[in-house]
Length: 174
Image (tube, rainbow, N blue to C red; front, side):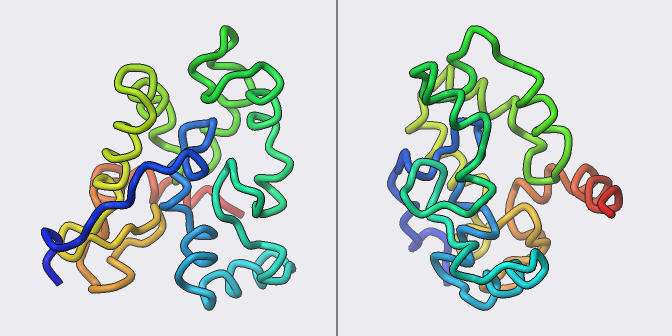
């Protein structure tokens, strides 16, 4: 499949997390939307059911337990802001700690800056491109080293640009 023939997803605020994550590239979102076997594997690793793990984005009604209890989401809603960067306390200790832990969070500061500069819809379009396979256009996660559809390596620009940081964060996990 030629990437030029793949239509990028339309900006959907439900899939634009307050912290700056692009929900469409989340392994749990991908499992929910397209790959139930992926979702089942993730659920098994966390001793949950696949149904309990389902997530359709930060601002959707269907969120995984972690996203349902997200302190940043609750804070943003309480302060009436759409994204953390709009808060006078940004970057707070909560988002600093959150950013420092997992490989898919390496670019949160860039995402927040881009949302502020260009608006969330433009940022969303750019993220769809950033996580798209250069060969087939499939959106991959930060943990998909090769494209989950066509096998191209790297799976997307995010993985290419953050290869070392991803490897480091993955080796730091228990």
